[in-house]
Image 1 (tube, rainbow over the protein chains, first blue to last red):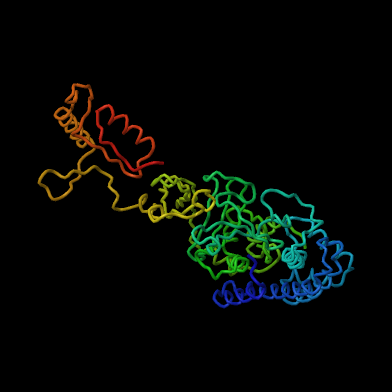
Image 2: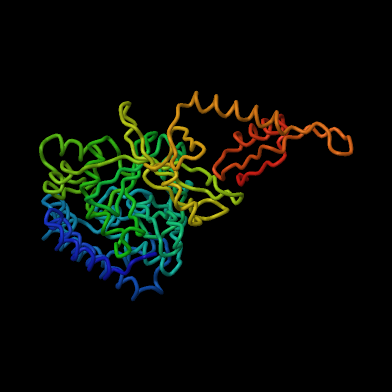
Length: 260
Length: 193
């Protein structure tokens, strides 16, 4: 279940209007989504040239990165803006090395490789071209398509009206795959006494699924409570829950695009 | 910009700033986080007690595991990962939460006396004494050792037992043993799990 880029952008705009506290973050996030949408469209036009090996696809990916860097240098927070400027002024080889390092890691902790490679990976998934050179561990709890770590989980009532089955959404290629309800997506803990979710009425359709064994968590977007939610966007808008989890010594399995 | 996200966030928060791992300012959101009322709920997989289909359920129990907090069941839903029902439940199963947490649930024995128009609460000891006495009286009065053709039957036709659908397997085992030892033949219940 991949929401269209436009649906994500529209949802970010809608939530930004409704929530003054989250507005600055969501406005920037919306711009980042627009950049990713443009990048995705560029990949769509070059579909015949994509092989799934970033080494060979760099010529297609590189042109998408420069516009991203330019915009981030303008609207990004100071630290990212400085970094964007340095990359723009630096050698192409350094940019390539950064992208390749980000591609080979299963968990994205580097902003620029994350923002640049998500549309690439998502388009590969859309055309079913498997990534060839991601060499991370292929564990039980990673994306079956690209091996990426899960960004969030979704309780979906649309696909299974009675069930509310759980799915994980890949933080790299946005592939969605079914996952057991009472199971830690990081360590596989299934002891119900070690698992739990935290919920606030302020974010009725969001919850923090936490594991007391590995102290990791991910947020769950409950579409059975709010069917119009767009998981990746609503997850960002629920940033206060991330901050709460952090203060309670939980660590997120996979950072989102704003670094929470 | 590759950083240790956890260390970065924690140092940011501890230092009074509120920046994400990528440097986004989340100070207003951090203030909002401080006001959130957060509750912990656990999900326990179990089996619906009502019929022989044995549907899987997930029981949501509210409680932060604090010693002085009483856990409370707040929701019961079908288990989407269960091979039998795959998340679905019949109306009875879907109402399980009300079976567990119901203000009208009886917590003491009750009796309606002959000629009375209402039920009254009685103590457990009194209930056990009265039931024992009536079982003894009824059994003594109606026990049949031999049938009209002289065959030994040792049965009690004056007592019948009807069990409810949420009686557990173990409870029903004891019921059968007890009723058979009394000679009760009219023995039925609806529990099959």
